[in-house]
Image (cartoon, rainbow, N blue to C red):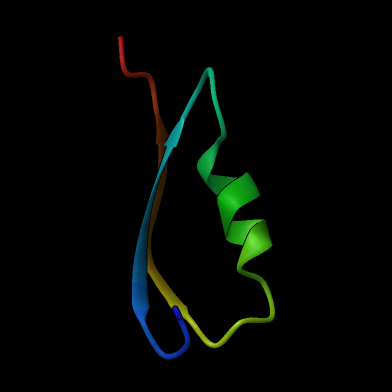
Length: 41
């Protein structure tokens, strides 16, 4: 479903951080164009 897509990852400090989501996409044919972990309070 995501093969060949460009991805923006927005992680949550108290939930799932962006690097964890990026690790889930490792080895897939996707391009991560932006990745950040923020605090949404």
